[in-house]
Image (cartoon, rainbow, N blue to C red; front, side):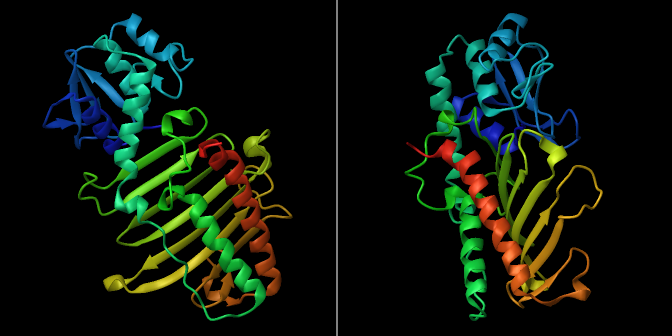
Length: 318
């Protein structure tokens, strides 16, 4: 778990904390957002967490804040050795410091924070239609339809969100990560992800192109030992933003480490040309075969179903 510049800034502005200008990151020497609450400066590290400067939260309050998430010193996903790693973590700590804390208040502030972040056109408007090549075969049509479904699973906020719960209702099961290149009002690129211990979905959009991605352990109980299936759909811009290619890729492993095993699959298919190849072997690309489409269709269905069960089902209103 981690917290981006924009997540931190939006949460603190929602809380109405005092902004401190001209601060540098504790980990990287770059300008970072900083806010003061109860005489303590909360400064972004420049990486993925927040540090305390000019004072620290009393140990008793820090322990109380961690206890709200079932954490004890040195911490867990939300806190670590006095660092703060999540939106709910920072909102819990600062409201406790000012004697305002209630679970209801933190939930309200958390939902408002994510509502502002998720309302960005870069997220809500990010529903790219795959390149629709002239009909090749029934298998190609099925493949194309599944690519579209895959993308909508990777970013469930690009369509009607009325069926989704408030983030405070599922953040214990699914972590949200959002990062923009600038202030959300003028941002031109975004990275967005949903993740838990079983799988993850994410997408990004910038001047170089965009991508949708899903990934999951093939046996969640065994984790890395069982291997994983990574699927993506990406579009690359060339010089003067002229399209280079639009590709769907599959990387399926049956075990941990970098050893190639029987049953592993490495496959890329261009939606624009209908060619297929192995990663880094594009010079050997050949027209996609029905067998390759069958493999891609099988794993698209599998990753879509896994993302629905492990992520989307936790987010949808019952």
